[in-house]
Length: 155
Picture 1: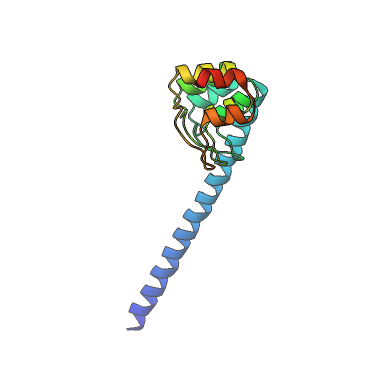
Picture 2: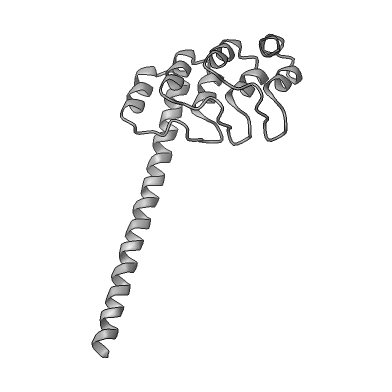
């Protein structure tokens, strides 16, 4: 009986240490992913296309991950990194993914009158009928922001 209880205690302690070790590893992985994603977004902002390409090819980042409330596509658009925008789309970035604030890349273009980026993402298949968490479509953002050129593209 004592031997059975002792075996059970050892088994429980061993299981706990294995679980705790896995949780610690998962926590480190999450920190690592966040660090690489932040670096990735900074490379996009800085226009470092070769470094962005290398990270994508090494699959060291999740291309559709939201960091600081934004998608990689939105970061490329807001920093006028057209070459990187095209690269991200070609590598599988989701055009219609919503950022933390509920807007898509197309809505971002419309809101800030980013006509070059808008043309590219429309040509690549961005959907115009998606609504933000506030209930607005890209055309609504263009009209509210008086982004006339983008509004014309969406009509």
